Length: 98
Image (cartoon, rainbow, N blue to C red; front, side):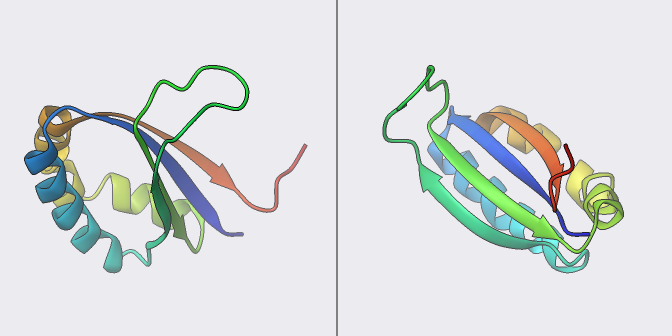
């Protein structure tokens, strides 16, 4: 069952965010993670928009996603991430189960 996370971000330091993005992207490959989409928030059609950008990353399964997140390579990037961006990461599985 495929798993993915959606990252919503408010960028604090664009240069550090670019560095974080490049380094985080490198860590995905060894765990089978792939960027599905990234985009800039434009407007809220319902509710309130509280972030500037979004990214969706897909993995083969939830264990692969968790292994990536808890890997030494990604954990080492968290201080850079926190300096660069306020980010929320939420995991999902498909197909959606009610």
